[in-house]
Length: 352
Length: 253
Image (cartoon, rainbow over all chains, first blue to last red; front, side):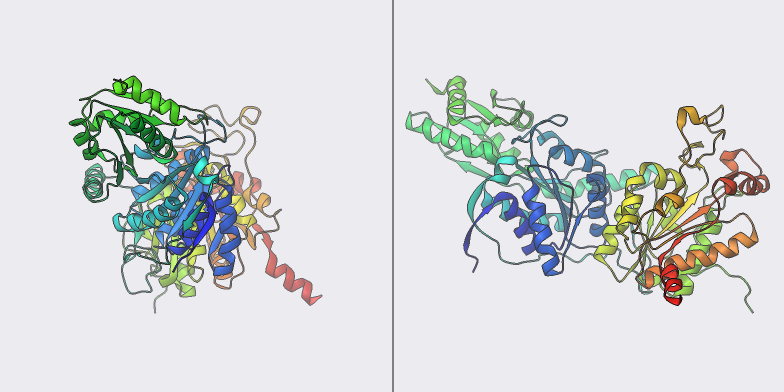
């Protein structure tokens, strides 16, 4: 049985990845995810795995692309500016229908931004990020325990649907220490007959490729991929619902913002305000239906974000703008307080 | 008796290359090397972005298609995942010497045990003949219509000379395929670059001076002559680094 250990979020991701059978890691130094790479650098050589510090984020993601083409579990991690550099490679990996895990321990932006926590990469993560029509699975942990659990899940989902997955964490979750029960060793990897492993003279050559010069073929490939995305949207939506049964107001938040929001919801309840929380765990696929259902029940929503307001657009789409949605945010590495969230709940009408 | 036949490591797909282009010869030499070493079943090739973008249809081994310039990084991932397989990249001058320079230099510095075939025809072919990092001073291209002016665009990059200064790589050589003698030599050198990998010796890169009559605006015959008259004087043929040979000769002394 796994025992409870005290770990940083970044380290929990690394250990969980190894336990999920990921024996290949490629990265490039960037704050605030450095503990993850350091953990891999220490551990991989001792267990016969591969840790390689690449010459750039571009090289790192393309090394990931190479390993993914051979059918093995592989990951990279970075933080916001570095993940921007990886977008080209992520598009190629998605366009070649390969599984891989990309971790983004988000920091403030745009540009070089800062090194404090942020959620300003929601758009980039959930709307494609790179060029072309594609999606990646995006999971948003809100604790060190979920950093570990969702890492394992990310690999499973990526393999199952042949697409990249992203763990969208932030600097707070990466740096903070919490007790965590590490997942048991498992490798739910699936058969990968498409992988390049050498024909051994026994089969026609496999080609891992995203180039289709004939437009009708490229269109067909895109339509087929989106059929697969529909399956993901149907089967893999994950969210947490907190005190929503009798709620008249709904706070929506993910990751570290959801932990702050939960405190605000508890404080509001003590004041007699009927408010609940919906916490998307999968940002893509986005929990549209739970929000749409909530729109029939509540008077309004508060979107709590560490950005200038990105997820709020998806909330409005999910509820077809049926009810007001207000933004409660901080940006640039600042974090909203529970009091600020409580004020927003009251501003929505929750003080009556 | 069979005097000449298509290598088994090439598929039956028809090449899309222009008349007079020497990519076809280079493909054949690469496939011959794979045949001769008996490694087709465990070889994985990395196609570039550029004229050889569809090389994945032509080589019969497993193939992947990399992003522009990233082939050595992708090959690194494949080789680290499958160290017993043989991994090669096939890249042009824009891909390897411009956008992919960092990947080229660092895969060499790491002495990745891969083989790189670097086709230098001094121009971007696929996009219609733009100036390449290897275009010669004064060379007329679509984006240097008055001739490459070194005061504005700087000077061509000599990849072999540059990489040979690194401690990392095992083998760096430049060959040409503009006449029978050069083709014969290129065949030997390319096979050596693959054999080095089979023997675990490390990073081996062969630069192949190649003709692009279409974008040079020449007849195929004149293009081959231009290689002798202009290209080879700027890019001298030869072995620039051969660590194992050097170590052997030192041991003999």
